[in-house]
Structures are given as structure tokens and as C-alpha cells.
Length: 198
Image (cartoon, rainbow, N blue to C red; front, side, top):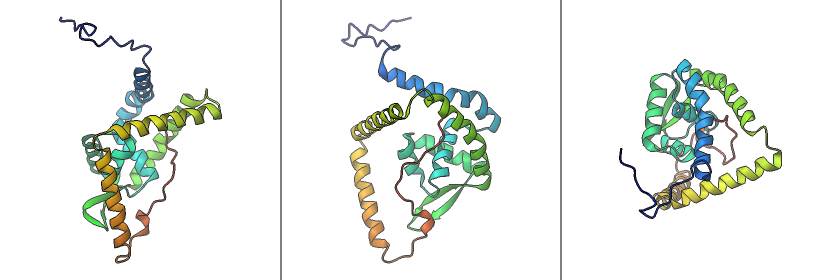
């Protein structure tokens, strides 16, 4: 077995048990582990499929690329999740009235029932995770995490292009709204949404 000498290469070995980045990774892994070990097998549902359902439960009618932005998952993972959920009858796809190439997604009746069933578990996990923090500590943690997310998104190579695409889309929507009647079920207010943890 060849041991890579990172110190000789100028890269000190990471103290993974103390490194903040690895602690964040560990929190994510420990949070998702009970789902994988119990609910995933019972309901034949992957963790990425569940996270997609969480988004659709609170933001019905969004497109797959918006789920990518909200969750931070890569496009292929979201595409696989959407395909599996549609095949299982847990989501439905509807035509976008403004873009025939794009599908709008929402939970089916079966999807809503499953979401409510698993959501109880998710809320219990959230309480277990944050129960030791008071309101001020939780608000501080949330603010710090928001800053981390903003920093990461700002560094992503596609971030600038994505912002420009959104700006063009918003401009196009404003112009087209004077010419067509938009189904109001797709109009979603910008808001902070509380979702079950997982």
C-alpha cells in the first residue's frame, strides 16, 4: 500500500476530528443515516428523492433546475430523483405555461400522504438535532450557515451565469405577463420555508 506523503507535497494532513469542514460533513451524514437505515428501505425511497419531495411539498410547481438550486444537489441526482418519483406515482409533471420545454413538478396525492407520514419522523429529528440550542443560539447558527451558503454559491463557476439567466427569465416573465394570462398556481411568494430535517 502506497502512503501519500502530503506533508512532503506541502499539504499538511488534515486533523479530520477537529477540522470544521469535516464536522459539518459529519453532521449531514449523521442526520441522514437513520433515514437510510430505516425509512428508505421501508418506503423504497432514496434520501435524494425524499429531499426532492420536501421541496415540492412547500413549493409546488417548481422545475427540476430550481430544485437543484434549493437543495444544492447536482443536476443528475435531481434528475434521477424526479424520474424515480414520477415512476412510483409520487409526483406529477405539468406543462409550464411559459416554456413548453420545461415541466412543473408537484406531489401527487400518494406523494402528499407519504410526505406527511415521513414528515413526522423528520420533525422529530429536527427537534433532536436543535433541541439543545436556545432561540438565540439557533438564530445565530442559522445566520452563520446562511453566510456559508452565500459564500459557496458566490464562488461557484456557474453562479454568475445562473444569476444572469434568472435576471433574463425575470425580465421575460414581466414582459410576457402583459400578453398572456398566467396560471396563478405557479406564482409563488418569496419566503423562508420551514421543512422537515433530513
